[in-house]
Image (cartoon, rainbow over all chains, first blue to last red; front, side, top):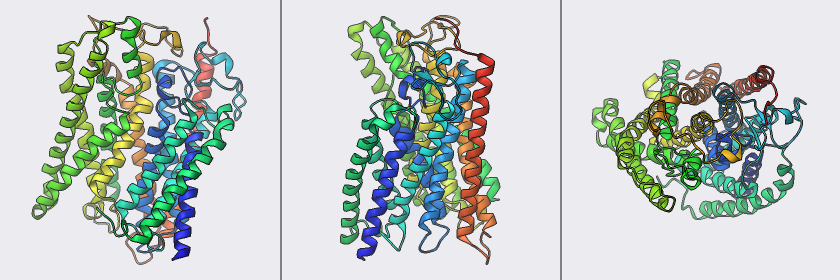
Length: 241
Length: 313
């Protein structure tokens, strides 16, 4: 019993930390990106990451149901990770299609002079008095990695909650609790970012990731303790829905 | 049968996200709302509909969950009728969801415009009345498609005759998941066509909108004064369908890789190997992601060569 409780706690903390890392890796441009005034995806961190994570959660729930009992934790978490990664990939790709063919805009970074992956120069493609526009390759790759990390974290929390070897919550309760822990971490990370971020190459990433992960650790430990209490008292086990 | 249902789900997803984006354009919800909100402060009195109930993801998650909950209650009441009850349950659920959305839209618009009194922005009653029905109808189409997707996915095992194909989540939770996702995608992709292009059509084409332009929205249409209905007509030509394509492709490939994995893992047969099925799904997904990165790089390179560096001041 103690072993299962500890494993659930550790998995929730790992899942929370990965969720926070994912939000920091997202190329989020917020509202300015919709006006091509900032590089990244044109929506808020929490909105985007939650959308990606729940897509992964959907696939993870289907894959977890492949096993009658004791789902394979790693395979279910990886399925969720790939689901989120694909959601991010298609969203960024179609976003770029609209930037390029709908508004005639070249994707370029506003924070670095040279794309760290393609080594393409960015400065001369940037519109003056903007913070870049579109999703350049470095941001695209960062978004894909962020989707993978966030999807893995969300699905990991889900699978340990739903597995009969660990928390043994009902499917619906496990889904809602996993989403809740994920969103809490995403909101904390969004506050830490404070506006827009382009991805791993953005100087903001290096400057703020430690604070973000520390806050995420605190939130995840709190969430994990609540889950452990729920497991011990049996309040949530068996499902409330 | 499993593949046929998968294609129906992908088609419904395409329709849902396209109408979601167009509905948000009609109401100026989400990101471009910052410009509609800012315009009166910059002296740009306008006739756009101004609602920002919340981010699109949360707003649609609420509409779809209301719809899914009502649909599930009706399905439970009419359990004796069988799957045919869905013909009644899904549209009724979606109607309630979109009515609630319409109420929130009207309150939001009037509240926001009233707050702009100090900038001499009037509340045009014809704008309020004229936009509520398009908002409700577009929302209805998006929500009915999402509820139908959730219904099919939660009953896929019965509908396709393949045991274990159903998603274990209940109908309202699936509606919540797809509502959140459809809103997130509509906000991330479709808003660009409105925010960058349609809202600033009188500014130079092919450049990012400089901060100094913010709030200086285009207020005149091809004929007369522009309203938010003109925005939907414009975005329906590219932004809306492109957004639908994004969600349609996500749902298509997400289901496709899972179904292929299930088939290769020996679905519903004596040789069923869940680990093999999951591993195949993961492998296919990773290949799709790599192809996407290559495509994104190719299209970026094409744009750089075709459009060239920024020219101008």
